[in-house]
Structure formats: C-alpha cells, structure tokens
Image 1 (cartoon, helix red, strand yellow):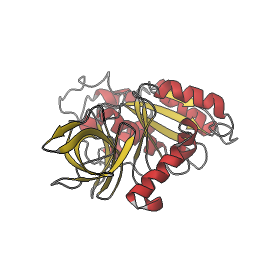
Image 2: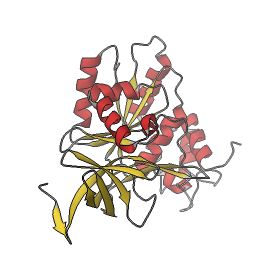
Image 3: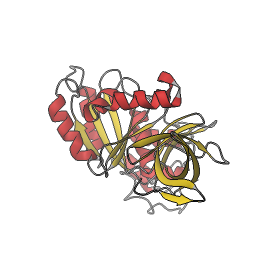
Image 4: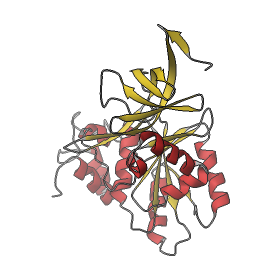
Length: 301
C-alpha cells in the first residue's frame, strides 16, 4: 500500500469510512475495503470520516483515531441525534411531484446544510409527471431565494440528466437526501452504475444483508468526487439549533439581521423587528415566516 506506514509491527493506513451498521464499520483505502472496529470507543465514527487504522488481518482493521472533520451533517429531535455523514461539501436535496413532497422537510434540510457550512443543490426529479405545477412553482421559489436548482427526469431522460448532475458533483463530496419515493436510488444508479454491486459487497462484508440500506453509504467516483447515499426518511429534526442560528440560515432574513431594535431579537414578538416589518410589507413569504416560527417552538398567534 503506497501510503501505509509500519509501526510496532502493524500496518498503519489512512482510510475512509464508507459504511456503518450499528457497531460494524467498513473502511476503504487504495480500492480495498476492510471490516473495522473502533478501538476503545463506540459510536463516534460516521460515514465519510477519515481515520487512522491498523490492519489486524487480511480483511480486518482497528480504527485508532479520527482525523479532524471539515463538516458534519446530522439531524436531531428531542430524543436522539442521527449523524448522516462527515467531510461532505454539498447536500443534494431530491424531491418530486409524486409522491407528495413536504416543503418543510426540504426547508429543514436546507437549514441543516447552511448551519453546518455546507452548500446545497435542490433537484426536482420526475419532471415527466403531469402533476408538476406545484413542484415547479416551489422550485422557482427556492431559486429566487438564491439556492441552486435543477429539474430533470432520471428515468425518462437519463442521458441529459446524468450530464447535468455530473457537472454539479464533479470535484465535490455530495450527500443525497430526500423523502422516501423521490427517486434517490434511481439518481444514484444513474450516476454510479456499479452502486448496486458495491452495496452488495458492503452487505456481504457487514453480514447484514439488506439492513445496510438503513445507514448512509459513501461511494467514491474519482479522487476528488464522491456521492453519499442516505436512506429515505420523512422528518429532518433541527433540535440542535437555536432560534438565532436558524434565523441566520434564512436567505431572506440575512440582510435584515442586525437591524432590529433589540440585539437579541427572536423575530417573534418584539417591537421594531426588521423581519416582522418586512413580513408586513410582503418582503417575506408568510409560509416561510410560519416555518421559522415552528422551528423557534412558538405556536402561531
């Protein structure tokens, strides 16, 4: 192994965590995959982590330490935290007109990405469906607010769709997230034709069969590009963020922050609040402000 070091008789490598299932981990280095355990600790390693590991046997490794992360994307509720991936620089949020998409889920994913310092791309899939007016209007709203957007049909227009997406994932470590049924798996297979084969390999090594689909998986595309697939889920909790941290992620709020009468304004009920004044003057969409109120845990008046 070109980058391996030998220390105290053991082979040391720098590797990437490419799959997890409970306490079972897979790490990858120089196109080889090992099943790994975390020495001395449990539960602190996530997909995407770069780690230092010792090779214990032909296909077994022991993780000694985690290299400091550049980013960490996770979701939280009042009961638990679920890490999605480390060291990513782009979140791809996928939605479609059918099954019915949840605007708040998408907005929450965008809040989480911005709070973590990660770029976002919103992809509207299944544009071949007739029931697309609401999805089209929603994508236009996101674009007006400054987010990067794409419209495509992974099934009906595979070639051009792949070309569009490849331009946006080249040179990036991207994570795909979306509600169940939005076509993430189709997009993954479009971008990575061998994804199914690699998933089967992960399953066999983890001895977990289809259960490995419940956790994120890292797929290297080339030396600079990777794609992380996540399971479909219906809720994106943001319990780890304060109201001020959430407000800072709203693009329509950003030029108004710091202009309220009170420095610690929550933008909920204080007088002379720049954000509430903009709302009254139609400068902020009511549904977006209501979304903010929900995250601040204050019921609508």
